[in-house]
Length: 479
RNA sequence: CGAGACGUAGCGAAGCUUGGUUAUCGCGUCUGGUUUGGGACCAGAAGAUCAUGGGUUCGAAUCCCAUCGUCUCGACCA
Image 1 (cartoon, rainbow, N blue to C red):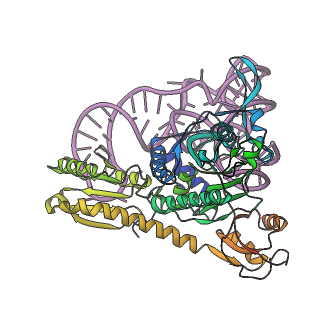
Image 2 (cartoon, chains in turn blue, orange; image 1 turned 45 degrees about the horizontal axis):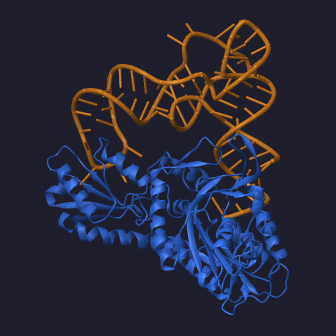
Image 3 (cartoon, rainbow, N blue to C red; image 1 turned 135 degrees about the vertical axis):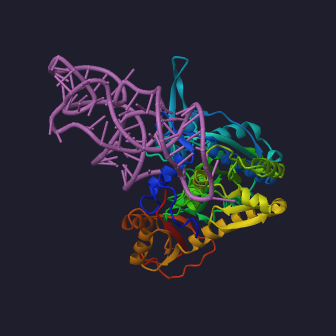
């Protein structure tokens, strides 16, 4: 494979130190910059534009499910925040609170939202009075603040960007369907756009969202064998609605409490893109989110016709809606090759005197280094299909990796071995939280990522306690 | 929040043990020229209140104290 040899020595190799590799890539590929404020980062154009592509995809998909975008305040009066008990217990320890305004102490301190269930509930209380007002399906794009103790670019920050959908329905069935439908949207996002496959399922009671009845999740697997929770949807039941006094007159003329959901994905997905696809030469971006999909590298720019032809190709591709960059800087071709490989540009187009004479361009795929020569007249047809091909290559590669890192654990020793190696251990479980927590202890940090839905236990007993197994759980070490 | 490592030019480092001219090197940047199919070469130039604050001293990047920040590993979490 052409890119099997490492060509970029400013990036720590993945297998030497994965954490350092990740940080190197984030900085060298100009995805982010550390800010002056602890735990906060500056999102640079190269990462933010990927976020915008994700936003575009999701807005379209959300709309198909009847969702409208709204925007609510970033601060929550602490008196309001304290209404739902589980919710406060879950979030209070990591809130940032404003206590002064205009130089005067606030009588009711304002919490910078760590999530907006409270604000949406408060809004819905006023907006909903009849079953005719339901369902309510709103989404907001915003940032939230959680005072994290250890932070890493994109994966965990004191502030992160996300979308949060908040909905109300008449029935439990509708609400649960919504939570599942939105999980499907997130799963599709991975498959269609990010080339990332997920393990899907339900969270255990211990791992579910503070205040939820059920949490559904998609879990990705990073190259170092650790899982990354990439998106969650929650069926909140009637708890928030009850606590916040949301009531409506139902079809039978009785006062009813609606059923609520919430769902979200965050800029953490950018971290997943980096850690699922990247290699020792840097980023490898899936073509559909890549800020630059094709980079044109002219060879011997001062030779007659080279630059003109490059510009012509650039215009042609741009008009087709492809994101193209022509690098006509004075750097040498070798430098440009390495640079755009590091930045993960999916496809490189080289054009030199030799190509021009023969009427060809040279095309090189970032994901596997595969090179091919194509006649210039045919690139309009060839390039879109090559980009699709790259997407499929990347998805398949990630899927193979995921499948080869899911193993059944039949006893404690196997469980330890699998989690130590990295990846998911599928284990039959009795359903007791005690056993779940014990797994964490004996495997040095392995947690239940999700319960497989519709999966019948492949063993009769739980290997931890020996009681009857009722569920199949995916355990992994996680970010 | 516990344990460890670190902070010197845009980036990466040396110097600190044993205090002493104008703080050194590589990359990058700028100027001019030669180059261009895998991180080019030559010549010249700019760029640093040595993280911050205090202390010791005739003299501190160097020794002492404190603070802040970053990274790694744990506990907690999207």
